[in-house]
Image 1 (cartoon, rainbow, N blue to C red):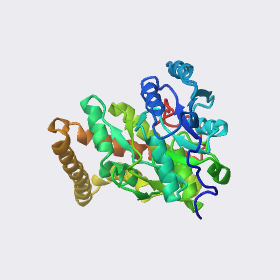
Image 2: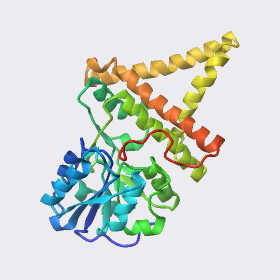
Image 3: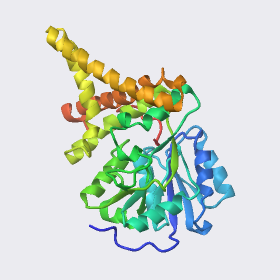
Length: 353
């Protein structure tokens, strides 16, 4: 199928949706970057901050911006999760074009204009840029940002390749014609995480085109500690299982590799005590993983600073193990125990990424 019916006018009205919950440390920079957009008429842009009942002062910061600039509006999201916030924003959006921007993200000054340009030029149904990591201040934060961008952590996902332009199975954030949601539905409010992946999977199955362009630039602030990164990726793995269950297949093989890795580690350890040959196989597999992580860590350290080397292998392990254990918990929760989705899965303190 071709792009959603309807051409894009030269200067379409754009609604930017920003789902938030307890993002006082990030929302100011995000809004400042959105209000500084060039190539878009001021009267052709609105910014809807969909707040999930934050208790850290986020709404007060947004109201401060709204008093200074009427393009900013604060919407309440009593359900607190991203999908519900996005859906409320879509319902209230006045724009012909809808952009999603997360509070942890700072966008380039031509971000909105480039999103519309790529959407129009490619005839795609969803357009976005690569997922670029902005390094944190600490050595741990910088190592997390460096590993985030590496193919070994991303499973070769094209949305982490900052140079790739072309068709993808999912894209960071997103830009859509509003009419698209009438055709394929809104975001799945059952999902605490992975609602964008699930939505893009529906697009792909409906024959829609998802396009990534490095001309669309934004920078995502990664988690700054291994603990917060663990919780985030455990959530990703947990809810990815529900997406697979609903659609009866993974969107990509890379989504099941961490689960297989963790299951292999847990099952292989007791088996290693049963026979020396099994012990050697288990040790060789672990050694191969450590070798791959070590090689990748050295290459990153050579480019970005040797002082990062002690932190990089741990960051790789957290990405892999957190996603894998989250997937294992999700498999037990949804597939084995046959429980329904609810927010008692891995803690979701923040709405945004």
